[in-house]
Image (cartoon, rainbow, N blue to C red):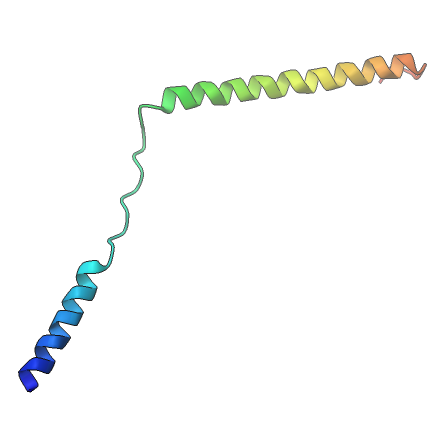
Length: 71
């Protein structure tokens, strides 16, 4: 009876240890998509600049249409 308890406990411990997932490895520092993502980031920055200039121009035009002083 003692051997059965020990073997059961040993199997439970081994099963639990074998099923636990190891920590995932860190992502690689550089991937094949880095040049593409860099280009996309640059395009987003350019679009942000264009949008800011468009808003400034729109506000200036509205101010002139309303007869306000230039900003």
